[in-house]
Image (cartoon, rainbow, N blue to C red; front, side):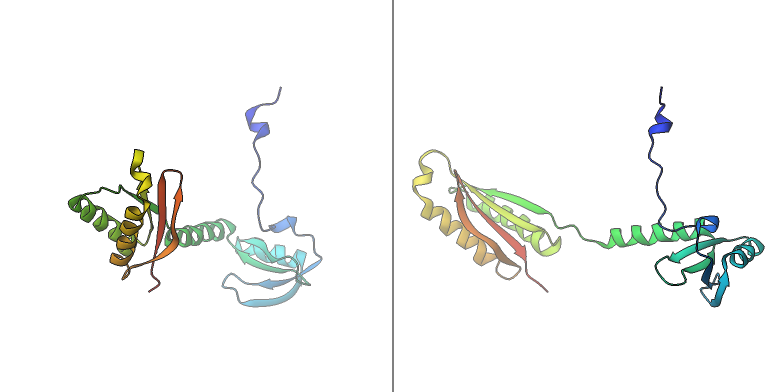
Length: 181
């Protein structure tokens, strides 16, 4: 019977280390990335053992392959740290939705506009304006269109219309994106 440990996938390394390198000779760089020259694999492994570091294959496709003397654990940690920093710097753009009705009162309208302006201008997110019709309100689509045009005009300083208003079932949808600075 197979155990859970047997079925676990072994993570594959991007770089070959020490005795995994099969080339007869390699172009070697030192711990500070200073070039040492082309040496045999045995000599490179001996130097790695003397310095108590790993021999890591950096460019396997080069002729001869480029290897570097370094602490692989530290190298892997720094690589993960750089990847995490790059991921943290990425801004994920969300689409925030604000719902209106054809009969939305002025006070409610102003609050929704304030929120929409904050989503677009300050947070850098896209704004989805949904105008929902109920019952016979659908016969007065012109009222809804005027409301969406008013929203577009009031937010013209911070947003551009990404998707023009269109009717989908019982709701009219318009998507606004932040203006490029």
